[in-house]
Each structure stands twice: as structure tokens, then as C-alpha cells.
Length: 107
Image 1 (cartoon, rainbow, N blue to C red):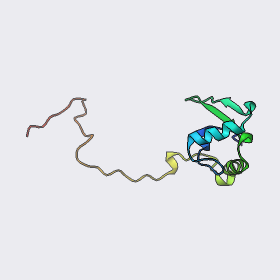
Image 2 (cartoon, rainbow, N blue to C red):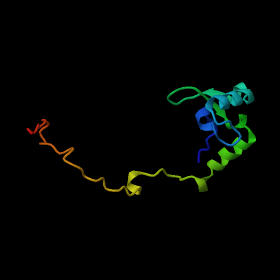
Image 3 (cartoon, one colour):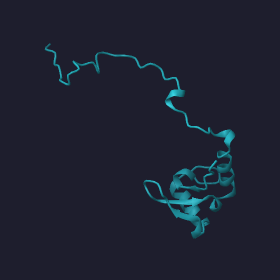
Image 4 (spheres, one colour):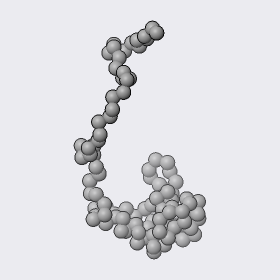
């Protein structure tokens, strides 16, 4: 299992030991982190990520518990695993002539 060790501010805000707002969380982590504990985010959107070792102990503990296998599914759920209710059919929406042309009824 690949343990996650880098976190964005969006992931940290509101966790135990962290302020609820992204702005205050960023301020706090920026004060605590050393330059080697901050990196540019690799995913879409950019921004920064902070190493778990730069976070308050309470936050680190919470994140480590989140990563334990007994609290997390090893495989994500797929549509095949979920029973979705049948959508009710209303009116004639979606029912056309099948030739790609719009039919207008005269009233």
C-alpha cells in the first residue's frame, strides 16, 4: 500500500489541529514547514503540497488513521457493485423518431 505523505491545503483545512478555512490553514502550515517540506503540486491546478512531517501532531495522527486499511476500502466502488434505483419514466422525453429530426406537434 502506498501511503500518502504530501497534502494540499484543500485536503488539510478543517482537519483536527488545523483551522477550518483554507486561508488560515495555509498561513499555519507555511509557518511550520521548512522549505524541504513544501513542493509544487504535480496534479492539475498547481499549487503547493506539504509533507506530513510539517503538520501539527494532531493532524498527522488523524491522517495516519485515515490511511489505515481497516478504515479504507482497498478497491474503489464501481457501478457494478452498487444497486441504483430505476429512473422513473416521465412523458416522452428522449423518445424521438430515431432519425435525428425534431418532430413538432401542432396544437
